[in-house]
Length: 156
Image 1 (cartoon, helix red, strand yellow):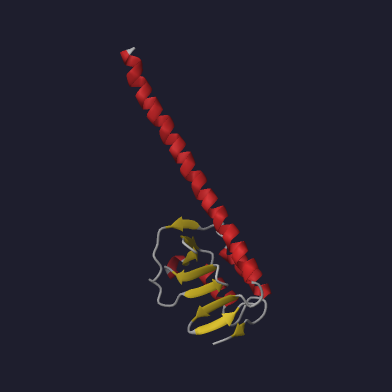
Image 2 (cartoon, helix red, strand yellow):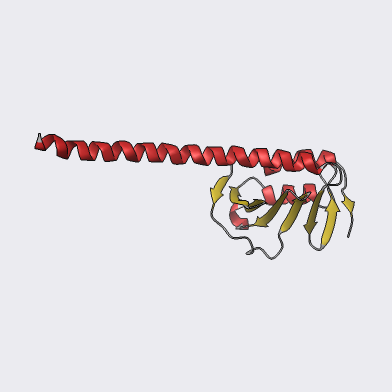
């Protein structure tokens, strides 16, 4: 009986480690789905004229067509969740979706085409990272003056 006790403890610890690991992976996935839902809600609730972007001292109102493309660029497929405090990029783009959500897009290491997204909705705040997708270029172009489909309205 004593020998079984020493066998039972490592087996229980191994099973517990697997359960914790699977739970962590599920939590990560749920967090990404939650972000996607908040992004769609933020863009939908903002409506026409509710999505604004500030970059290089210029404030634009993002058109609805450009908002659809912006949503595609801000989705997290291909992105990894990271712990990061925004503020290292001297030229970030700040995108506001009404009063619901703010996304700060920062350029990372240009040699690997890295970009960071810091998303905040109320007290919920997450950071994501992409590599090799030209995300910073496409997002700043889509939400900036040039726009993706049409030019955006410059307010300031």
